[in-house]
Length: 531
Image (cartoon, rainbow, N blue to C red):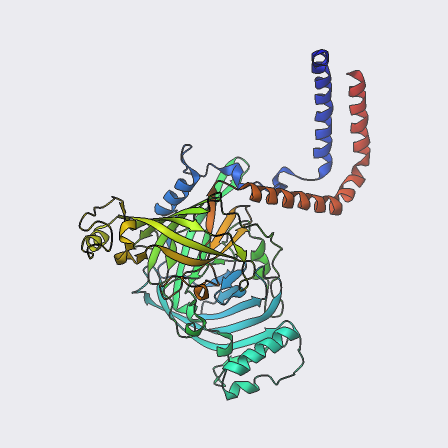
């Protein structure tokens, strides 16, 4: 009690000393204020967001309002388009892409393939040359443009002896007699050598063994949107251009003949891309001889607890436009999902909403897709809300006992379909089990992204282990309930980066500032004595 009475003067003296120490740290650290990367939590109130509105609801409402997205019709392809990170195709295949479209309709495309989900261990690169011609608006996929393309040449560069042997073996096993002479068995690897896989003049095509096709060029869509920027206290935006090309069939045997009705992960314009983007410059400068090696990404634990929502209007094959919103309860291993379906590619015209819930198992590392986690989900309950006249008529005319209460549907009214074992008219079957693939990543703005396995292209569900996905859908953005485990992981990663910075730059920073350091230290000592 007596010591508490004498604490204010000492506290004041300590405060003055701490103020000087803080001044010393700021003065000698060499870090400007604008060098510090700000977390997304510093900007919870995005432009247009109401203070009382939950982040998840704002995010979905923003998508339903169009999110300042405009689609160019016909699409303007001219320019350089690049991946913004490591992509995963069915198989799995890990790759990055860099496509250049010229004014005369010619194009040059690079596809860089890797062994790992971080795109740091390249195996081979493809350099693809050809010509593309835009046709008319797609009759199947609203908002897309159909195109014809013709390949002139496809070359391959191997980045290791092992990659060369493995790839040649695949080509020899699956291609015709002519391609068996593509590369003699036992030939030594020649770094930088370009081998011709396809030539329009020579009528040679040895690409089938790689599962290679450029059918993605037959479906095209270009979007523009404004990305909010936060520069200290000033808010602004910058234009981002994205190129959506046709999706890749989830079945390997079908990909060579499949004509896309959905999209892959978007490429972005090399000039108008998202910021920050650590991978963009690396991919932009790469070529077949110098494949991009992307920065190391931290492996995040599979902690699903919280709320996750779509970051854009999503498109699935067979012309499905939707947004997704999931809530995971880690303690009970239960989940809830809201699927908002639309009839347009900007998600402005709702058709119906499906609410589903159930449980999921503890995950295990995938043995097929490196970096992924295998889970098993069960769906036990579902509710449906019709939002337009077409869906309403379909539900009210459904067979009795196949989709809730017959002839009792109305627009905007939610009805439970659990007691009828789902809704046959919408393809919902209960109870239902799905074998899933999940992955959690962190983007350059420190936001958590949840990747869920890509749905089978044929419209079926992964109801058996052999149909488990080997690639991912568009990521969901965590919009509520950040987990403690992720926070601890981020903190440890941040402290490690500080330690690395201090080891590499602290001595160099302090050495020329020693006179100032001594002066401030002397001043602090005098003030301490005076107190």
